Every structure is written in structure tokens, then in C-alpha cells.
Image (cartoon, rainbow, N blue to C red; front, side, top):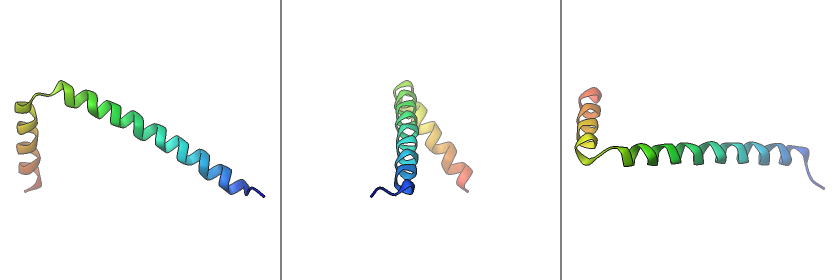
Amino acid sequence: MRNPEYKRLANEKNKLVKQMTFMEQRLEKYAYALNGKDIQQIQQASRNAAR
């Protein structure tokens, strides 16, 4: 006996996994585009913003 709620949750999970995978790919693409100096500047800016 399969619960209809089970199917709904499985669909929701698959949708979220697809979104996460897409976001991870975008993040990796941006990380490759940045060099070490850019990353240091971003970290410095985020530290300053946290104050």
C-alpha cells in the first residue's frame, strides 16, 4: 500500500535535489572564475560587513 503523501514527498525531494545540484554547479563555476586574490577581497569584505 503506497501512501499518496509518499509520492508527493518523493516528488518534492527530487525537485529540491535538482535545485541544489544546479546551485552547486553555479557555485563551482563562479569559484573557478575567481582567483585567490578575489577570494581574499571577498572574505575581507564579508568580515568588515559582519562588524
